[in-house]
Length: 378
Image (cartoon, rainbow, N blue to C red):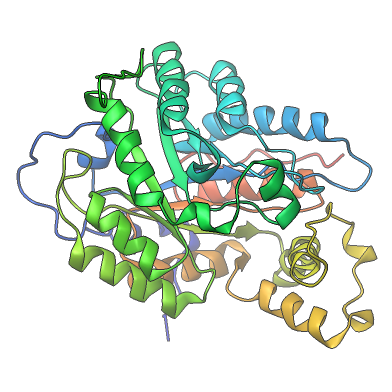
């Protein structure tokens, strides 16, 4: 049982959010493509992943514009980095071209780190990915992150349209090694200009122990979510740390835990705000399509089939949500179990204003930003 905590103590010296870095050596070997902030502080950072979710009645272009505005606010509130995602032919997600969207986000901001969570490497040639990130880093020096994933598409139709099948993820290690070569010295006489020699941090997205072990082999920072449950995530993190091999891409293990975090005035309201995303997740598992977000009033669990209800209830579990006090306690518990270096927040709601308010309140809770002056809901 975690004891009650003062919600406004989360990032003070007493707090678990000042968690010491696990296994951090006294001196760092040279690092290539590493976010310098990863080696200079023992304070847990908070960042944002936005998938450009589409609400009922909204078009995809406006969802992308909202992502850019969201990034501007995230910078104002003090978040460390802002990432965007890659999803193809998904009705409820507008983010399909992450490096293009990252350029728009970086252009609209001035300090916050910007990156991808992530580029799905099986969908792209490593040379092209390297060149795209080289252009981004050249235009926005010192601010670009390269988050990489292994997904090959949500449906068979999408995979065929991309020119791939499920087996195309089998050579992921070779593709990743090729990409990292292009960031350093080129390969077989081929060079990725203007990328070669630039300092572009690479991160590996994972949902399983196997992917975490891959990050350890390559010496890359790990980005992981509790897709298979909190216990499985903790086990994967432990394997990552135990098997980590220092490389020019990382001197020590670095763990970024991705989680929904939602703050509202009451526990009940916070849970209600999460209903549309849980419904969409259940629909994706039962119908093979990730839909737009519906208003909470349109979500009727009692009308769901047994299978839909099972996925719906499962999607609601494990989220960090509630009042400031509840969220602070849950964050301390998460950090105690994972010793995470960073929390990557990925919260989706139908109510855009409530989501923005939640992120601002979280920024205040963890001492990223001054206390909000008050919200006017539209």
